[in-house]
Amino acid sequence: MSLPTAKTIIRKAGSAVAIINGDNREVLKKYVNQVDLLVTSPPYADARKKHYDSVHPDDFADWFLSFHEAFYNALKPNGSLVINIKDKVVDGVRHRFVWRMIEALCDQGWYSIDDYIWHKTNPMPGYWPTRLRDGWEYCFHLSKSKKPYFNADGVRKPIGDWVESRLRKLGENDLSRHNSVNQSGFGRDISKWVGKQTVLPSNVISLALVGKNQGHPAVFPVDLPLFFIKLLCPEDGLVIDPFGGSGSTGLAALSAGRRCVLIDNNAEYCQQAVRRLREEGVAEDHEVQPQKQVKPQPGLFPKS
Image (cartoon, rainbow, N blue to C red; front, top):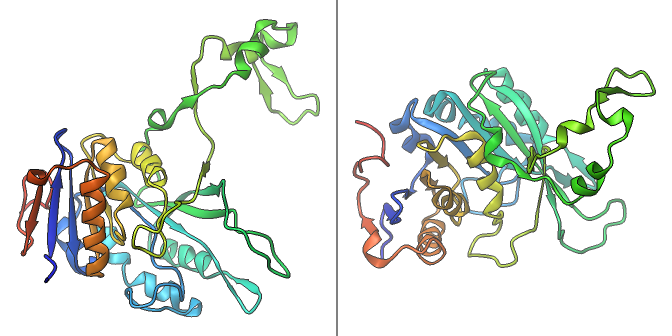
């Protein structure tokens, strides 16, 4: 059975995800200045056979730059690009192709806003003679602007039980700003925590690895793109994952009520993404619309 070029999955709430089988460098030409957030985990160096290219770490930065123009042009002026990726060990040492890629993007005009760490709470077991288990990965936040759209309130988390016991008895030094004893210039006013129910998170995101394969060699947890969607995409915004894989970003967008497009050049991954969105996104049969040719859909596909 031949695979359709695109399928649209529509939820009752009104949010929608399109899955497009194609080269994102071509597909994104239809989305110039329309995208609020590009969030993706690209193929890692030498790790994704028959998916784009099996790229040697030495060539990875140049390979990724081939997507730069399409990504940059698709984003709105205050849009963001988030890249989840990890360095590769080559001949026993870390190859820094990831940092070379980020520096190359900055040379092309991108602003490196912040570096996030995905802390894996259940890293894979194993033994290596000179290193320990990989317990984290990078998530780089880049933008076309030094002041991209940023909604910190969208990712607030419960303050925690510690605050009740800590604030029950406030000392004299807790009722006003108390400067550090080492004269560092930093200080605190503990009384400002009274009555607060939430707090802003740090730039370390603790999430477990996905327990099942989902038909793709590197599935990241849905909550990872969900964090950045809530932080960097407005409620009426458009999210695109240019290396859509098995559809995790699409599931995240559906749960957050955002419009989303997944692009992948691997037809089997597109089929798997459709299956996951149908099953895990709770889309009913009449809400899944196969299309053999990509046709504009109001509110989802690009403006003509």
